[in-house]
Length: 209
Image 1 (cartoon, helix red, strand yellow):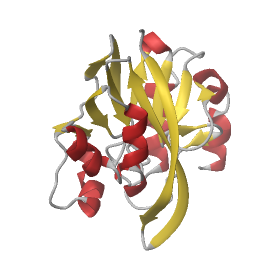
Image 2: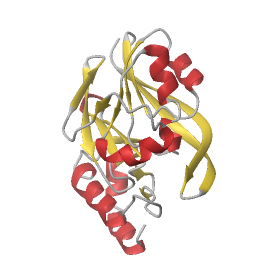
Image 3: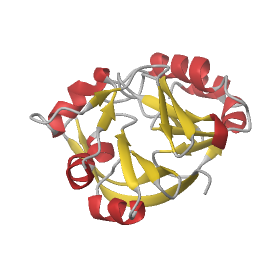
């Protein structure tokens, strides 16, 4: 069967800068009926493993290393012996969660990761965090944006290791140049499209977040 995307929502907490918040996270599983990748292993390893089923888990992809997005990475990797991928610039955040267990493989801008007969392109999009990335699947017309781009605007930049001008630059040069019909599957909340968000760029810049 052709490559497809599965989705589940997991719930837990996000902690940074001395605060903790309840959050719901989108976990995306992309592949075919034989093999798959998990994008952003949040909170609940058992639920993610159930969604993967008997497919081969060929990798765990992290859009960034905030604790709500990587909380299930270690148990998922242990259960399926699957490598975890993270951009090196986010090690400052990763080490707060897994100080003695570095990710298996680095992610690089422009890297291509195959799964289920399609390719995911790595786009380094710093701003929400230094090593934030998005994964673009041209064959599926889909962008997995993590916390870089949401329905209604860019990801938050009010906490440590984030920067608003940087995220605007990332979105403008790496994401809004994609086809406008590209579906954007986000780290939290509802999907959107590149075209719907591109029209709002001047408003985001004016409001400063």
